[in-house]
Amino acid sequence: MKFHQLFLAGIYEPKKLAAFRLLPIGRVFKYVFMFIFLFTVISFGRFYLNDELLLGQTPDLIEHGRKIGWLIYPMALLLQLVISTFYVFIRITIFAYIGSLFLNLRKKRGNYLQIWRTSAIAVTVPMLLTIGFDFFPEIAANGFLFTSIVHLLYILTAIKYYPKQQ
Image (cartoon, rainbow, N blue to C red; front, side, top):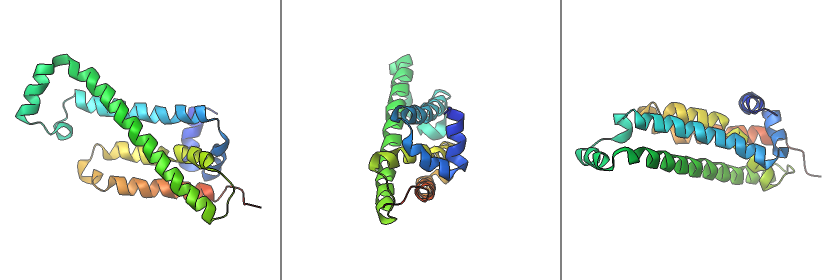
């Protein structure tokens, strides 16, 4: 399955979202890392363009940036990549655990790895919303709560299509 098909199904089709539990884990990792890369590039672009809202520039910070010089950019890119990777994988893991609790509650057949794959594809809309909220700091204060609810709703909708226990 191609990435654009995963992307569109992750947005519109909860039945396919449930079927993605059977995808190879490598394919799911590639899909997640595409979002991490997108998230990192946008964040680094804002950093590179000296977004004052993002940096919260103080005179000390500006002077420290001058001392470091051009080395700040590769360090910033690497740090943003690590933080984005950590954030996305922790988020997917936490929501997969919550989803596995709902799997047991609704008496559906599946294991943690399957619900983790579903959670990884279900992160599509929450990540797009997070990227959008990044440009509006006044909305971003409640953005995590909103995107968490959206992520959970996508997982719960997909669980509806998991097979029943026998």
